[in-house]
Length: 201
Length: 298
Image 1 (tube, each protein chain N blue to C red):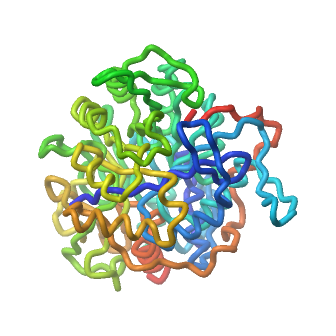
Image 2: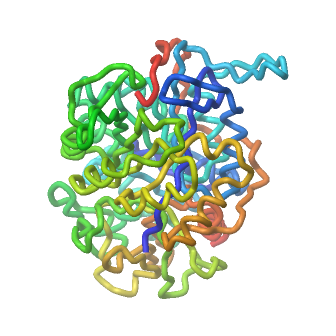
């Protein structure tokens, strides 16, 4: 069973629509009990880090997701969902994350004449092979929408970067834990490819 | 590098797509669901739907087909989002936090708020706090009185507010808007090009992305808008009457040196499938919603 975590953070429908287009049978899960023996988890989400973690904890989902990841089952965080995988965030205060990808989440530094949030389509550079990024086009392009970004403590967790004044982390992977800062569910063919890759891991 | 976005703006009235001139003349051009399927295969970067319905009735029936198939706005959002794998913004008639919540629950990624934001600016703060700035686009309908004097109009461009556009855009940003959608009333449907001094001024005075609309008559006008400082270029009427119009628009932008996404044709053959969910936590609210507002870009 593929579980899509519902914790009140953003548009779940987009993710479900994309999974449906790929023929995947997804189940929306909003409590730890419902997570049960899910084989895979997608943690989507947009919004503030603190609210996201508070909601996950309230539904006892934080511990359940960590437990799931520790058993080696695949987990994919999308956008805020990827940032929640980090150890901590400085978004509106100091918040602890799920700590599955050691590192911190910080605001994108303004400057370079660039606007924050980073909104729109940007191409990524794959810097390490990852099953999440198999069979992509030469210059895969995805839809980004974020003001904060994940800085992994260990460089090797970063498997793809995106150029926005500086090189930001676009995708992370640590064993069975994956993250995409962009929205694969809103990135047409390249995005569906990434979701399909996750489904076949 | 970040690409410049091309965003078709679709105006919906009574469940049908219309073309518009100066916010008042509206001519039916098609079905909002079929149109999005076309755009989805053509590498558009995002879609903005603005509902300008005057009655609270959404009728997908084409006069020439004699099919009675009435849809609510929410059903239209739901159908469009099922085939739309690009970000989707819905605007029009949004008055309450619940209006935003239902649109997002039915598949919108962002909402455009206009009249309610101008009347109660704290609505922007509240919406951004609850849904995140990324979901809140403040739409501003602009009339140009004289060089450098732009006024915000609401209620579908019919009611002046006395607000200065640049000051209002800055306030919207301060209050948590994620993007600004600037729409020129004077230029709507005229094809005479964007209001470039307006774009320059608003882009200079704000740090959030600025999307511009109103006045595109030739694809070269899109290039002018980018050079004036817009983060994303939008247009409505020009995309309705030409096959593969968005691809042509992108070619013109690319030729002028604008960094755009030129992706190969995308197609999914599952456009009629329902989402494969065993259970969804978003239950359908009942249909007794108050009629949508009469005006455009609310």
